Length: 319
Ligand code: NAD
Image 1 (cartoon, rainbow, N blue to C red):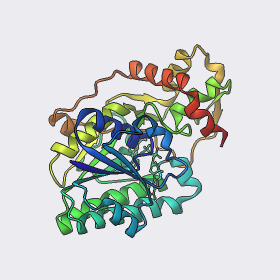
Image 2: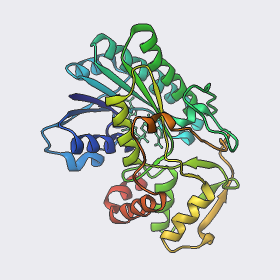
Image 3: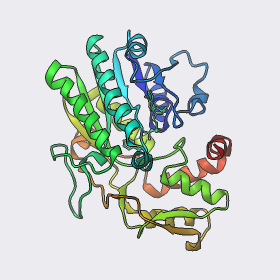
Protein backbone atom coordinates (compact mmCIF):
# COMPACT_ATOMS: atom_id res chain seq x y z
CA UNK A 1 0.00 0.00 0.00
CA UNK A 2 1.15 3.57 -0.68
CA UNK A 3 0.40 5.79 2.32
CA UNK A 4 0.16 9.58 2.25
CA UNK A 5 0.85 10.87 5.77
CA UNK A 6 0.13 14.54 6.50
CA UNK A 7 1.96 16.01 9.49
CA UNK A 8 4.43 13.13 9.39
CA UNK A 9 7.31 15.36 10.52
CA UNK A 10 5.58 16.08 13.84
CA UNK A 11 5.64 14.09 17.05
CA UNK A 12 3.03 11.36 16.54
CA UNK A 13 3.26 11.38 12.73
CA UNK A 14 7.00 10.65 12.73
CA UNK A 15 6.56 7.84 15.25
CA UNK A 16 3.76 6.47 13.07
CA UNK A 17 5.87 6.51 9.90
CA UNK A 18 8.63 4.63 11.73
CA UNK A 19 6.03 2.12 12.97
CA UNK A 20 4.65 1.50 9.45
CA UNK A 21 8.07 1.09 7.85
CA UNK A 22 9.11 -1.35 10.60
CA UNK A 23 5.95 -3.47 10.58
CA UNK A 24 4.74 -3.51 6.95
CA UNK A 25 6.03 -3.43 3.34
CA UNK A 26 4.15 -0.18 2.68
CA UNK A 27 5.61 2.91 1.07
CA UNK A 28 5.12 6.22 2.85
CA UNK A 29 5.04 9.80 1.58
CA UNK A 30 5.21 12.40 4.35
CA UNK A 31 3.52 15.69 3.44
CA UNK A 32 4.34 18.40 5.97
CA UNK A 33 4.65 22.20 5.99
CA UNK A 34 7.49 22.06 8.56
CA UNK A 35 5.91 24.62 10.90
CA UNK A 36 7.72 25.29 14.19
CA UNK A 37 6.43 21.83 15.29
CA UNK A 38 7.58 19.93 12.20
CA UNK A 39 11.18 18.83 12.14
CA UNK A 40 13.10 16.68 9.67
CA UNK A 41 15.32 15.59 12.56
CA UNK A 42 12.27 13.55 13.68
CA UNK A 43 12.71 11.42 10.54
CA UNK A 44 16.49 11.59 10.21
CA UNK A 45 17.02 7.87 10.84
CA UNK A 46 14.79 7.09 7.82
CA UNK A 47 16.91 9.01 5.32
CA UNK A 48 17.95 6.66 2.55
CA UNK A 49 15.05 4.24 3.09
CA UNK A 50 13.66 3.68 -0.45
CA UNK A 51 10.12 3.24 0.95
CA UNK A 52 10.10 6.74 2.52
CA UNK A 53 9.72 10.07 0.72
CA UNK A 54 9.27 13.61 2.06
CA UNK A 55 7.32 16.40 0.37
CA UNK A 56 7.22 19.87 1.90
CA UNK A 57 3.76 21.38 1.52
CA UNK A 58 0.81 23.00 3.25
CA UNK A 59 -2.51 21.17 3.65
CA UNK A 60 -4.40 24.39 2.92
CA UNK A 61 -2.78 24.55 -0.55
CA UNK A 62 -5.14 22.59 -2.83
CA UNK A 63 -2.79 22.28 -5.79
CA UNK A 64 0.14 21.12 -3.67
CA UNK A 65 -2.01 18.54 -1.83
CA UNK A 66 -3.50 17.25 -5.10
CA UNK A 67 -0.14 16.86 -6.80
CA UNK A 68 1.48 15.12 -3.83
CA UNK A 69 -1.48 12.87 -2.91
CA UNK A 70 -2.04 11.51 -6.45
CA UNK A 71 -1.09 7.84 -6.75
CA UNK A 72 -1.59 6.94 -3.08
CA UNK A 73 -3.93 4.24 -1.77
CA UNK A 74 -4.59 5.66 1.69
CA UNK A 75 -4.31 8.94 3.61
CA UNK A 76 -3.46 9.28 7.30
CA UNK A 77 -4.16 12.87 8.31
CA UNK A 78 -2.14 14.01 11.36
CA UNK A 79 -1.30 17.58 10.25
CA UNK A 80 -2.72 20.15 12.65
CA UNK A 81 -1.89 22.99 14.96
CA UNK A 82 -1.75 21.01 18.18
CA UNK A 83 -0.87 23.09 21.24
CA UNK A 84 -3.76 24.30 23.44
CA UNK A 85 -1.82 27.25 24.92
CA UNK A 86 -0.95 28.55 21.45
CA UNK A 87 -4.61 28.24 20.43
CA UNK A 88 -5.59 30.47 23.37
CA UNK A 89 -3.04 33.08 22.28
CA UNK A 90 -3.84 32.91 18.52
CA UNK A 91 -6.94 30.92 17.51
CA UNK A 92 -7.01 31.99 13.83
CA UNK A 93 -4.26 29.64 12.65
CA UNK A 94 -5.97 26.76 14.44
CA UNK A 95 -9.24 27.25 12.60
CA UNK A 96 -7.43 27.77 9.29
CA UNK A 97 -5.09 24.77 9.49
CA UNK A 98 -7.34 22.34 11.31
CA UNK A 99 -10.68 23.12 9.61
CA UNK A 100 -9.78 24.57 6.19
CA UNK A 101 -6.79 22.23 5.87
CA UNK A 102 -8.84 19.14 6.72
CA UNK A 103 -11.46 20.18 4.19
CA UNK A 104 -8.78 20.36 1.49
CA UNK A 105 -7.33 16.96 2.47
CA UNK A 106 -10.78 15.30 2.43
CA UNK A 107 -11.90 16.96 -0.79
CA UNK A 108 -8.68 16.02 -2.55
CA UNK A 109 -8.95 12.41 -1.34
CA UNK A 110 -12.50 12.36 -2.73
CA UNK A 111 -11.45 13.69 -6.14
CA UNK A 112 -8.55 11.24 -6.33
CA UNK A 113 -10.78 8.36 -5.16
CA UNK A 114 -8.39 7.31 -2.39
CA UNK A 115 -9.34 3.89 -0.95
CA UNK A 116 -9.19 4.84 2.72
CA UNK A 117 -8.75 8.02 4.76
CA UNK A 118 -7.91 8.06 8.46
CA UNK A 119 -8.52 11.35 10.24
CA UNK A 120 -6.60 11.79 13.50
CA UNK A 121 -8.77 13.45 16.13
CA UNK A 122 -8.42 13.78 19.90
CA UNK A 123 -10.25 12.95 23.14
CA UNK A 124 -10.33 16.72 23.77
CA UNK A 125 -13.25 17.06 21.32
CA UNK A 126 -15.56 15.56 23.97
CA UNK A 127 -14.63 18.20 26.55
CA UNK A 128 -14.21 17.68 30.28
CA UNK A 129 -16.01 15.00 32.33
CA UNK A 130 -16.37 14.47 36.09
CA UNK A 131 -15.30 11.21 37.66
CA UNK A 132 -16.36 8.41 37.19
CA UNK A 133 -17.72 9.12 33.68
CA UNK A 134 -15.98 8.24 30.39
CA UNK A 135 -16.98 9.32 26.89
CA UNK A 136 -17.94 6.77 24.25
CA UNK A 137 -17.72 7.42 20.51
CA UNK A 138 -21.44 8.24 20.27
CA UNK A 139 -21.41 10.96 22.95
CA UNK A 140 -21.99 14.54 21.80
CA UNK A 141 -18.93 16.75 21.38
CA UNK A 142 -18.27 19.56 23.87
CA UNK A 143 -14.91 21.14 23.03
CA UNK A 144 -13.93 24.12 25.17
CA UNK A 145 -10.64 25.53 23.80
CA UNK A 146 -9.95 26.97 20.34
CA UNK A 147 -7.69 23.92 19.78
CA UNK A 148 -10.31 21.34 20.69
CA UNK A 149 -13.08 23.27 18.91
CA UNK A 150 -11.03 23.38 15.69
CA UNK A 151 -10.28 19.66 16.07
CA UNK A 152 -13.99 18.94 16.64
CA UNK A 153 -14.72 20.93 13.46
CA UNK A 154 -12.15 18.96 11.48
CA UNK A 155 -13.42 15.66 12.90
CA UNK A 156 -16.97 16.49 11.76
CA UNK A 157 -15.76 17.74 8.36
CA UNK A 158 -13.97 14.42 7.82
CA UNK A 159 -17.04 12.40 8.82
CA UNK A 160 -19.28 14.54 6.62
CA UNK A 161 -17.24 13.46 3.58
CA UNK A 162 -18.20 9.89 4.40
CA UNK A 163 -21.89 10.64 4.91
CA UNK A 164 -22.23 13.01 1.97
CA UNK A 165 -19.86 11.64 -0.66
CA UNK A 166 -19.20 8.10 0.51
CA UNK A 167 -15.49 8.82 1.08
CA UNK A 168 -14.13 5.82 3.05
CA UNK A 169 -13.25 7.75 6.22
CA UNK A 170 -12.34 6.37 9.66
CA UNK A 171 -11.57 8.56 12.70
CA UNK A 172 -9.44 7.97 15.78
CA UNK A 173 -9.79 10.03 18.97
CA UNK A 174 -6.67 9.51 21.04
CA UNK A 175 -5.85 10.58 24.56
CA UNK A 176 -2.67 12.50 25.52
CA UNK A 177 0.41 10.93 23.95
CA UNK A 178 3.98 10.99 25.23
CA UNK A 179 7.30 9.57 24.03
CA UNK A 180 10.33 10.43 21.86
CA UNK A 181 10.33 13.45 19.51
CA UNK A 182 7.57 15.39 21.31
CA UNK A 183 8.11 19.14 20.94
CA UNK A 184 9.40 20.52 24.27
CA UNK A 185 6.42 22.83 24.76
CA UNK A 186 4.17 19.92 25.77
CA UNK A 187 4.10 19.06 29.46
CA UNK A 188 6.22 15.89 29.66
CA UNK A 189 9.14 16.97 27.41
CA UNK A 190 8.95 20.52 28.81
CA UNK A 191 9.27 19.30 32.38
CA UNK A 192 11.96 16.71 31.64
CA UNK A 193 14.11 19.12 29.61
CA UNK A 194 13.64 21.96 32.14
CA UNK A 195 14.92 19.67 34.88
CA UNK A 196 17.87 18.58 32.70
CA UNK A 197 18.68 22.29 32.24
CA UNK A 198 18.46 22.93 36.01
CA UNK A 199 15.17 24.88 35.72
CA UNK A 200 11.94 24.51 37.69
CA UNK A 201 8.76 23.07 36.17
CA UNK A 202 5.67 25.33 35.83
CA UNK A 203 2.60 23.48 37.15
CA UNK A 204 -0.81 24.96 36.28
CA UNK A 205 -3.32 25.77 39.06
CA UNK A 206 -3.78 23.14 41.75
CA UNK A 207 -2.19 20.46 39.50
CA UNK A 208 -5.23 18.21 39.81
CA UNK A 209 -6.32 18.25 36.15
CA UNK A 210 -6.49 14.64 34.98
CA UNK A 211 -5.21 13.31 31.64
CA UNK A 212 -5.11 9.72 30.31
CA UNK A 213 -1.51 9.11 29.15
CA UNK A 214 -0.84 6.81 26.20
CA UNK A 215 2.66 5.89 25.04
CA UNK A 216 3.07 7.05 21.45
CA UNK A 217 4.09 3.61 20.11
CA UNK A 218 0.89 2.12 21.55
CA UNK A 219 -1.16 4.91 19.98
CA UNK A 220 0.55 4.37 16.61
CA UNK A 221 -0.26 0.65 16.72
CA UNK A 222 -3.91 1.55 17.44
CA UNK A 223 -4.01 4.11 14.62
CA UNK A 224 -2.57 1.58 12.18
CA UNK A 225 -5.05 -1.10 13.25
CA UNK A 226 -7.95 1.29 12.64
CA UNK A 227 -6.51 2.24 9.24
CA UNK A 228 -6.39 -1.40 8.13
CA UNK A 229 -9.28 -3.01 10.02
CA UNK A 230 -11.60 -0.27 11.28
CA UNK A 231 -15.12 -0.10 9.86
CA UNK A 232 -15.65 2.70 7.34
CA UNK A 233 -17.51 5.71 8.76
CA UNK A 234 -16.68 4.68 12.34
CA UNK A 235 -14.87 6.47 15.16
CA UNK A 236 -12.44 4.73 17.54
CA UNK A 237 -11.29 6.11 20.89
CA UNK A 238 -7.66 5.21 21.73
CA UNK A 239 -6.53 5.56 25.34
CA UNK A 240 -4.43 3.47 27.70
CA UNK A 241 -6.52 4.05 30.84
CA UNK A 242 -3.60 5.77 32.62
CA UNK A 243 -5.58 8.61 34.23
CA UNK A 244 -3.23 10.69 36.36
CA UNK A 245 -3.53 14.21 37.83
CA UNK A 246 -0.80 16.51 36.48
CA UNK A 247 0.70 16.91 39.95
CA UNK A 248 1.20 13.15 40.33
CA UNK A 249 2.66 12.90 36.83
CA UNK A 250 5.07 15.70 37.74
CA UNK A 251 6.08 13.90 40.94
CA UNK A 252 6.86 10.75 38.94
CA UNK A 253 9.10 12.72 36.56
CA UNK A 254 10.85 14.43 39.50
CA UNK A 255 11.35 11.05 41.12
CA UNK A 256 12.90 9.50 37.98
CA UNK A 257 15.37 12.41 37.79
CA UNK A 258 16.13 12.34 41.53
CA UNK A 259 14.55 15.75 42.30
CA UNK A 260 12.15 16.81 45.07
CA UNK A 261 8.96 18.90 45.08
CA UNK A 262 10.92 22.15 45.51
CA UNK A 263 11.48 21.99 41.71
CA UNK A 264 7.74 22.63 41.14
CA UNK A 265 6.83 26.26 40.38
CA UNK A 266 3.04 26.74 40.73
CA UNK A 267 1.73 29.08 38.00
CA UNK A 268 -1.65 30.65 37.26
CA UNK A 269 -4.07 28.18 35.72
CA UNK A 270 -4.60 27.93 31.94
CA UNK A 271 -7.74 29.81 30.78
CA UNK A 272 -10.72 27.43 30.56
CA UNK A 273 -8.52 24.51 31.68
CA UNK A 274 -10.44 21.25 31.20
CA UNK A 275 -10.52 19.32 34.47
CA UNK A 276 -10.58 15.73 33.34
CA UNK A 277 -10.47 13.79 30.06
CA UNK A 278 -11.66 10.21 30.04
CA UNK A 279 -12.64 7.91 27.18
CA UNK A 280 -14.13 4.45 26.94
CA UNK A 281 -11.92 2.25 24.73
CA UNK A 282 -14.12 -0.86 24.46
CA UNK A 283 -14.50 -0.43 20.70
CA UNK A 284 -10.78 -0.39 19.75
CA UNK A 285 -10.07 -3.18 22.24
CA UNK A 286 -12.71 -5.27 20.41
CA UNK A 287 -10.59 -4.83 17.25
CA UNK A 288 -7.74 -6.50 19.15
CA UNK A 289 -5.76 -3.49 20.42
CA UNK A 290 -4.33 -3.10 23.90
CA UNK A 291 -1.49 -0.88 25.14
CA UNK A 292 1.73 -2.86 25.54
CA UNK A 293 3.65 -0.51 27.87
CA UNK A 294 2.92 0.22 31.55
CA UNK A 295 2.88 3.92 32.36
CA UNK A 296 5.91 3.86 34.69
CA UNK A 297 8.01 1.82 32.28
CA UNK A 298 7.11 4.02 29.29
CA UNK A 299 7.65 7.21 31.29
CA UNK A 300 11.09 5.96 32.39
CA UNK A 301 12.03 5.11 28.79
CA UNK A 302 10.79 8.52 27.63
CA UNK A 303 12.78 10.44 30.24
CA UNK A 304 15.85 8.41 29.27
CA UNK A 305 15.30 9.28 25.60
CA UNK A 306 15.44 13.03 26.43
CA UNK A 307 18.52 12.44 28.60
CA UNK A 308 20.23 10.65 25.68
CA UNK A 309 19.08 13.00 22.88
CA UNK A 310 19.99 16.53 23.89
CA UNK A 311 21.11 17.07 20.25
CA UNK A 312 17.43 16.85 19.33
CA UNK A 313 15.77 19.13 21.89
CA UNK A 314 18.43 21.72 22.81
CA UNK A 315 18.19 23.60 19.47
CA UNK A 316 14.38 23.63 19.75
CA UNK A 317 14.49 25.20 23.22
CA UNK A 318 17.04 27.80 22.10
CA UNK A 319 14.69 29.12 19.37
P1 NAD B 1 2.73 18.17 16.30
O1 NAD B 1 2.39 19.62 16.55
O2 NAD B 1 3.94 17.59 16.91
O3 NAD B 1 2.85 17.93 14.72
C1 NAD B 1 2.00 18.54 13.79
C2 NAD B 1 2.65 18.42 12.43
O4 NAD B 1 1.75 18.99 11.46
C3 NAD B 1 3.97 19.18 12.30
O5 NAD B 1 4.94 18.37 11.65
C4 NAD B 1 3.62 20.39 11.46
O6 NAD B 1 4.71 20.86 10.68
C5 NAD B 1 2.49 19.83 10.61
N1 NAD B 1 1.62 20.89 10.11
C6 NAD B 1 1.02 21.88 10.83
N2 NAD B 1 0.32 22.68 10.00
C7 NAD B 1 0.46 22.17 8.75
C8 NAD B 1 -0.04 22.54 7.47
N3 NAD B 1 -0.81 23.62 7.33
N4 NAD B 1 0.28 21.78 6.41
C9 NAD B 1 1.07 20.68 6.55
N5 NAD B 1 1.59 20.30 7.72
C10 NAD B 1 1.28 21.03 8.81
O7 NAD B 1 1.43 17.38 16.69
P2 NAD B 1 1.25 15.91 17.30
O8 NAD B 1 1.29 16.01 18.77
O9 NAD B 1 2.15 14.98 16.60
O10 NAD B 1 -0.25 15.62 16.89
C11 NAD B 1 -0.55 15.04 15.62
C12 NAD B 1 -2.05 14.91 15.49
O11 NAD B 1 -2.55 14.12 16.55
C13 NAD B 1 -2.80 16.24 15.54
O12 NAD B 1 -3.86 16.17 14.64
C14 NAD B 1 -3.31 16.29 16.97
O13 NAD B 1 -4.47 17.07 17.07
C15 NAD B 1 -3.57 14.82 17.24
N6 NAD B 1 -3.51 14.40 18.65
C16 NAD B 1 -2.39 14.67 19.39
C17 NAD B 1 -2.33 14.22 20.71
C18 NAD B 1 -1.10 14.46 21.57
O14 NAD B 1 -1.12 14.13 22.75
N7 NAD B 1 -0.02 14.99 21.03
C19 NAD B 1 -3.39 13.51 21.27
C20 NAD B 1 -4.51 13.24 20.46
C21 NAD B 1 -4.55 13.69 19.15
